[in-house]
Every structure is written in C-alpha cells, then in structure tokens.
Image (cartoon, rainbow, N blue to C red; front, top):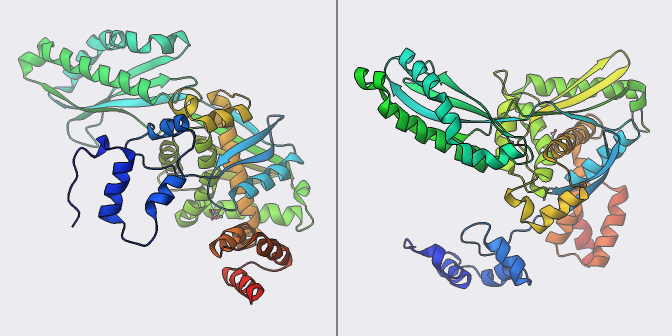
Length: 437
Ligand code: MEV
C-alpha cells in the first residue's frame, strides 16, 4: 500500500523519481532512464522548464510544426502548430493551399473586452444595495489605481463595474460584473488582482455603510475571478469564392458547395455532430494557442460555451451559397496574449511569435481563427468527398511503422507501397511482417 507523502515538493528531482518508482512502477521498463532521456542537456533550459510548474520530473514533448501558405488579409503567413495528431498539420497546409488560389482568408477582430466578477451574497434590501454600490463606486475605481497604472499607461484598464442582481438564478446572489481592456496581455493576473481588490473594498465599505448597519443587512464575499467566457472578445475569419471556383480534379464546384453547406447545416442542427465538428476546429485552434504560449484550456472552455450561446450546442462555423458565391466563416471568442505568461519565457513560444512576424494579440486572434476555419474546411472537404480515413491513415502510417520499430528501409518501402494502396492498421502490419519473412 502506498503511504501519503509530505514535503514532496521539496525533494530533489532524483528523489522524486526514486519515490515514484519505488511506490508505483513495478514493470520491467526502466522508468528512470526514460524520464531522464527527456531532460534537456542544457541545464539552464531544463531549469526553466522545471520551474514552470511544481514537481517536474521530465519534459513531455509535442511536435512543433509549421503550416505554410496561409494568405490572411493579403499577407502570407506560416503558422506554427504544436500538436500530436497525425493529420492536423497536413490538413491545415492543404486548406491553406486550396484557399491561396481562391483569394485567401479574411479575418477581423470584432471586439476585445474581457470580464470578471466579484460574486457575493447579500441579505437585505436590494434598493439599499444599489444605493450602496452607487455611493462606493468611485472608491472601487480608485482602489485599483496602483494595480492598473501600467495597463492604463498602455491604453487599457478597467472599462466598467456594474452591480448585477442574480437572485432569480440563486437566492441572495449578486455580483460586480467588471469589464476590462487588456490589450496585448491575456490579462488573467491583472483582472484577478483588480477583482480581489474590489472584493476587499466592497467588504470594508459594507461594514461602515450606515443604512446597512441600521437595517442589519449583511454582505459576504464568496469569490472573485475572471471569466473564461469572453463573448465580447470576438474574432471572425472567412473565405468566399464563386461556386465554380471550387471545382477541382475530384469534384464539381456546385456539388461540393451544396454538400459542404449541408454538412455545416447538420452540425448546426445536431449536437452530436456539432461536438465532433467543433473538435476538428479546435485541432487547429489549440495547436496555435499552444505554440504561441497561450492557455488552451481557457480557450476551449470559452469557445465551447459560445457554441451553446443560443441554448443548444451548435456549429462554430457557418456556410451558405448566395447567388453564385460560396461563403464560409467562423466567429469565436478568444482571450489571447502576446506579452506576459509563457510568451516571454518559453524559447519555442518566442520562435513561434517570430515566425508570425511578432504579432500583437489581435493579429494572433485572427491567425488562430483562420487556423480553426482551415481545419474545419479540410475535415468537411474530406468527409463529403473521400471520407476522413484516407488522409488520416496516410499520415498515421508512420505511427504504425514506428510501433513496429520499422527500419528506414522498411519505412521507405511501406510509404511507396501505400501511395497506391489503402492504409489500414492491418494492411500496414501485414506489409511489414511480409517484408520480414
Ligand atoms: C478528427 O480529429 C477531427 C474530425 O473528426 C473533425 C470532423 O469530423 O469534422 C475529422
């Protein structure tokens, strides 16, 4: 039986690994050797990674790839992507190439407001609470002067605070709903610091507010935190071309456009399809969010909430044919930063931002939205034509070959053979086994 451990975070890395192995690892596999094989030989670089989080015992690699040929608002971008799924970068590159010949992508940031709330209970007269809020609002605004000084210098800061009565949803529940402009910062630390200061000021002022004292009203802070739901921080990316321009060697433009629009309509109507449809979009979005050092969990949570904004989980992309024009677009909320957080720490994030020509947060929002749209385009294009497995298995072939520890010669032969034959797991295994006979 494993016993609880105390003071674990203070142990050295070696000791942590020894403790782990003696308590949890009973296989023949040399866990220590594997963990250490991923340590960086550059001790300073390793220390940087060790210190990102607590109890680091190794590094967990993801491939860092680039997808070229993205024409966005008339400029050519190569997009860095960090992702493990075989076919995602290939699909992005294909979609980029497809639209390169058809006018490219247009992208636009529609809004950049972030938000957070001080959640509190209030037991008393609602009119008194409103009077209290209006009386102390200047004090609330003043209370964050030192926190917001730098952000204000750059042109951002708090936009507003409003008192919201949430008692219809939950008894005695109110909030201060606060809105912010955080410019090129994702802004989580700034927002949370402001909110915690508002909570403190709110609580202190409530204790001394005379009408509350006489009516025995009570105000209790529950918590203060930013919201990862940012529907006022929106970006849109789109493509458009004439239906006949969609014609390729494999399909007629009109047939393809109609089937494509129908596939999007199904994702709008059927949540089970919408989830997979949007998962494909997130393949592109997360990969760029990660590569640029942003918080993909925050983005995921916010984007999926947005997909449900009309009361039912639905497609994040939209498509229609108007006259002879095919229109296809995405609109998503994204809280993105190009300063602060990992952006100035992780060497590969610096490289990713350099590849993107040192963009500001708005530009990264546009690029991410385009990556999501391109990924969805590639997925639907496959789904309504050849099916998804053809391209996916072609890319997955290398994983199967690696699982079989194929030699470079075996790999070359397999790649050649499967140029003309359908890849399945079984077919790949049989091919290598036959080679080895
Ligand atoms: C696979 O990672 C993503 C897809 O399933 C997306 C989709 O079905 O639209 C191919």
